[in-house]
Length: 406
Ligand SMILES: [Zn+2]
Image (tube, rainbow, N blue to C red):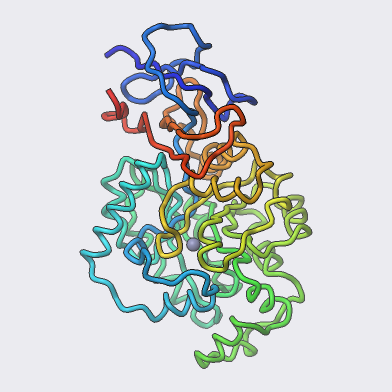
């Protein structure tokens, strides 16, 4: 089959420093990039209006929560959101499976080719085994009391052992958040990941002010929650007079590659300090979920100097209207109009591929198989996203079925 040649107003390759005007991207029928040629090199070209970019990497999702779409009210704050999650009625397996399948179809249609996905159960594993998408599954473990660390860890390992580490499915263990992890649990997770040669992990980080209050003073909504559950945290927990980052860094980020997810209440001092101490750590932002739950965004100005370490995620359909990286970019650009589209595309494509070591993904350059996404309906002269901008995949990453349009 002859190579397919596609062209749009601009191509953001994430390999070149500037967007390329009317570049011709040549792909084979397996979706491998053969050439990125200057405009007018070829005549048998399919033209599109808009911007071409690599397939998106959704660095943080919870596929198994897809059946909770629109089940939890907005803006209730993380404490009430967690209560809802804890106390929710059990959903049946069919409902969960159908919702996950629909969510995956939605992600792929929106241009996402790879996902860093949190799992607390094995619910999503069969789907992942059978998928063209890349998945890194973080099996999530929680337990604030050190006495339960070994038991919770053992249960997490049992779930982890169900992931078939073949093809595009990989995984590691992950703690949920600083306010649900003991030092003992962090060390068990870290050691296990290193032993299994997957020394990458993630953690929800500074998603609420209460998390910092707990680590600063031992007070606040999370301390209250444990008291309500009849757990006396004073028997095993001492506040650090510091934000939760001190705890995460000391036991996790020091020599493991960690994705810190949310960072809504992370201050500039923390950001600067961590990037000096642990430059391999990556920040993952899920702005639409932050607006959904806390109605607040991280201060992106603090993180802009570390643009190479920023990834984007959707979080789950429990706290998002859709699973779409372009929608996350639109939200960021609406609040931070100075952040350019090429920068946002770097966050949504290249950086996630770098974090997860997906070497074929993330950039449009020769011999890669990144998927090619088209962003349409944007302000092409200013290269700005508009409220109606949308994305779709033109070329997929499957060897057998990469060309999605004739
Ligand atoms: Zn999450």
